[in-house]
Image 1: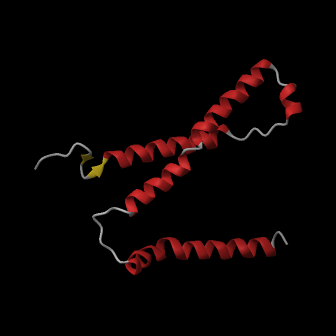
Image 2 (image 1 turned 180 degrees about the vertical axis):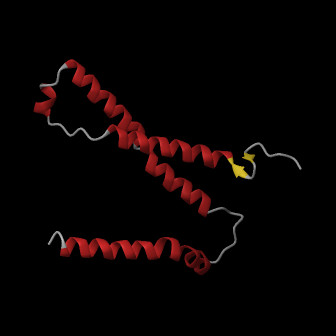
Image 3 (image 1 turned 180 degrees about the horizontal axis):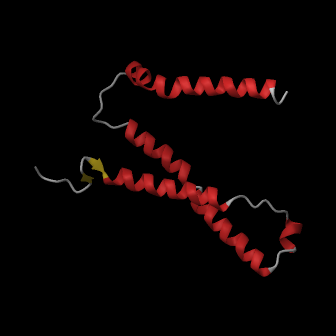
Length: 118
């Protein structure tokens, strides 16, 4: 059996590569934190603080690509031309994994907001 260039042990290399990049991007975004500053605060920065703010800004710029990569990867994996699946079958398979948890946690959040946070 001939080994394909883009597959290793039955896994697509490009899918794992894109997923790895997306994971690292999201980690960069979350690790960099949020620096919300006003122009007045920016004028009071020391040169070292300004460099730190610039580095954080670079990390956040890198991290912004994480979520769109995950969305595009999900679309690429779901919309494979070789799959022949009816729309009803598609939604039935995903209802238990996505639909039910979504409605459950939405109800929990709804109760929390009105009961605890008034």
